[in-house]
Each structure stands twice: as C-alpha cells, then as structure tokens.
Image (cartoon, rainbow, N blue to C red; front, side):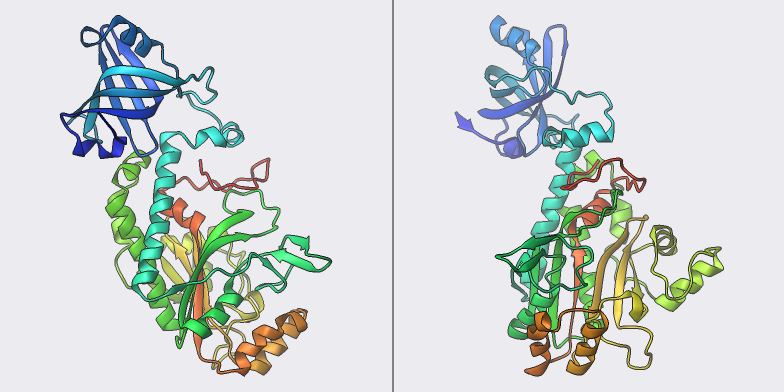
Length: 432
C-alpha cells in the first residue's frame, strides 16, 4: 500500500492508499461519518460507511476530535460534488496524536484571539490559502528574475550604513560598534549591480515604527532588484512586467486557494494588462485637490486615503512619478530640468492596498551624493564605500523594492483593516 499526499489523489483513483492527516472537521449522518481531512497539501473528505468497516473503526471515526492526527487508509475516488474533485473511502483509521479542547473552533473568533493563537491559526483553510499564494509569489519571483538573467545576491542584515537614515531602525551593539537591522539592502545591491549587471535580493527588512495599523509591519520581506546601464523608464517596464507575471502565476497555480479566499479572478486578470498607467506627482496632487482633498498640498507625502483615491481612478496598478526631493531618500537622481523633484516612482496597487513598489534611478554624481549625505546628517565615513561606486566606473543604474506581505494581501484579496490595533505585532505575517 502506497503512502501519498492528498494533493496527489488524482494519480491514485481506484487505489487503496495510506495518508497521514489531521481532522479539520467532522459530521455524521446515521450510518455515515464524514471526515474533513487536511495534510498540508490540500483538504478533502473521508467517507466512513458503517456497513463497510468494523464497528470499532466506525465508532472511532465518530469520536475523533478537531486536529487529532491520524493515519487513514482507504480507496481514492472521484468526487464531482467537491471543488477538489476527489475523496477517500475510509477502511481504516489509526490515531497518531489526540487533540482535546482545540481552542480555534469552526465558530467565529475575533482577530486578537486568533493573533494570540496564530501558531494554531495557521492550520485553518483561509490561512493555508494565503500562505499558498505567498509561496507561489516567492516561486514566481525566482522564476522571473532567473529568466531575465538576474543574479541573486544576499545583502547583510546587520548594517553600519542605512538607505534612509537611522530614525526608524533597530539599533544593536555590534562588538562595541553601532549596527542596525537592515531596512533595505539597496545600497549593497547597487554595489552588486556594478559587479554583475542585474541582481536581486530577497530577504527580511525591519522598521522600528510604533505603528499599530495592520498596514505597517515591523518585520517584512522585500524583493529588491538593481540594474546597471538602466534608466528609470526601462526600470518601470521591468516592474510592471514582474507584477503582471506574479498575478498570472497566482491565477495559473493557486486555483484552490483563490476559491477558498473567494477572490474574483476576472479582477485579477485585469492586472496582467500592460502597460500600467503613469501619472506625475504634480498630476496626482491636482487630481486630489480637484476631488475635494483639501488636506494635501504640493510637497506633502500621500496618506492612505490619497493613495486609495488615486488607485480607484484607474483599473490597474498605477505609477506615480517624480516626487518632491524633500520627501525622498538622498540617493535618488535629481530631475534634469527641475531642482524640486527626483526621478522616482511608486506603484500603487488597486482596491485600496496602497504602495507595493518604490523605486528610482540612482544619483551617480559623486559630489552631488556627498552633498546629499551631508544634508541628511549622515556619517560620511560610513558611506565612503558607497561613494566609491561613483569613483570607479559608475554607470546609470536603477532599482526598486517590492514588499512581499502587502503584495500577498493584495493578490489574496484580504480585507485591509487600517484601524489601530491595541497591540503592536512583532511578526504580523499571518493575515486575518
């Protein structure tokens, strides 16, 4: 008898197999017990018919509690009534580990309760679907960049210099020197791009912001490509191609997860249509003011209501180009004809999910960068290596960062709650 996983049921129709699983739920109807089984790859139903098994097996099936682990033996059958398409006719049950008084029952629970039990909440069908989509985005990310000849580089997580100042960083003592948990690998990726041409990193980043909204995380994962010999407009084309590729990959490979989350596939399909629209920061401010937003002036950064309105003005992700220099990072290339803006862009996701990508063309003039470092009160000594990149064969180069967690939230169609939560979360990567 072969041991299989639920996801492989289609390859074993008519065969008697063995499956290790947990009891997600159960119900009985007279002489039949229905077991909802999960094994980490998928969910399906086990049917226990009293007349086809021993009395001991049938009574055991009726007594099984939620999250008890079991070995199930039986025959795989097609099941046209379920979305999964298969079930198992159970002939034998062996309990591996009992589960008593499991705290997350099929009834409704509040988000705070679930967050306090997230080590168990991860087992639920909804969380399972979200993490499958997250996994697919990760897989597709590697496929996209490998197909486009990028080299994967891992920048340090403990850093001495930072991309955007130290205000919102976690500081630590590194053998009697100050070091910080990385908020971005970008500066190091610039060095890598000048060695390899096109590179990307994928790793954790940290922001010491005391935000209590679920939109801002203290720890999240970010994908950061950097490209030599590339100007901003070419970078925007890479960005939209990458995002469209992620959307299509989720559509192609996460069918069951999208069903569980009740995500509208027709909405997602629109997000694969290129090119994405582009508007300037100036045009975005004008759009907002014309539509009654009197809380925004030129030079202000956009808040959630502003980004949501701008996004809702389009049916796909939209780029907002060329923000004011005063509200952007020191390393961005100045505009060739204006002193007040830099060459950069944010990609705003539809449906109110906010910014998912921030990127720019990087400044390559040594003296300009040195001046910016001084203006931002950064330590020149700590950035000497970064200035070296402008001393020795500098070239036009551009890059961007995509936040994985917010992209998952968007593609999964998770309700994006922005009200304050009473408890800041350290590892808020498992979503409600």
